Image 1 (cartoon, rainbow, N blue to C red):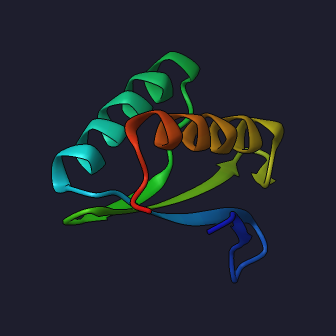
Image 2: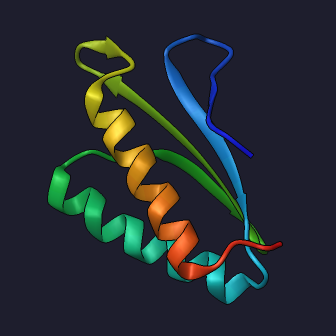
Length: 85
């Protein structure tokens, strides 16, 4: 699936489905480390092998290049970890 605009029109969201919970958790750990480095954090949730990620910027409010950059990082990381076919 691809990134979509949130219902508030203030961010982007995507659900990633991995083959296992461990793969989903590995994805979250890698993204969390990048979040710390970039000082930009998502709204996200995990349910077994699925991770839903939402990127938005609070100041200034809305979608920013930081959100797009982190979404691209999530895509690359998910590919490296291995999405469910």
